[in-house]
Image (cartoon, rainbow over all chains, first blue to last red; front, side, top):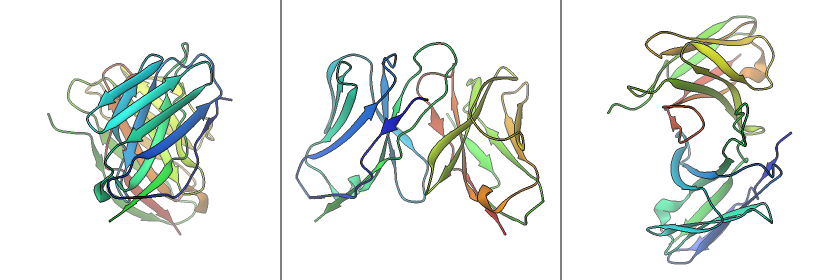
Length: 112
Length: 112
């Protein structure tokens, strides 16, 4: 069974700080990852995808993938109260049948 | 492009009844996946349909079924409802299945 682990939080950071969200996974065949953001009462929306080892930056967001350690993270710089949401990590298919597995998500609270 | 739409948005049923939920994907998307989201279990994959065929299936009992029509619209059915089926049911569409998924607003089902 593929496992995706995230700290449920809540992770509380002050406005303007860097928020660091982490995810570990068990399937060594996972090649790429998605980070989704889900506001309370809303559906998940994709904010970042990363397909290779290293860092990928998009505005205030940086995704980091370390396949050797089976670890993926999302950094949010200059955190804003509007970033307060639950962040879900999801590895993409490792080939064969695709059974999406999401982490349970980390709740982020950015306080003014 | 219009986003993913789901109907109905809210539903109240009693135990033993059955329910049918509908999802219309983004125009041109052929893959529709269904998920159940609960506070205790997080986001769990039910099944995926692609070109009217069930391509992947999660670990849910046979009471949960689905289908996809030639226009890519999809329905899921839950028979003999149980209290534990109360959840947010999300559908997501993508062009091929394994890549970026776009979620609909969800149907919130309450079983009494």
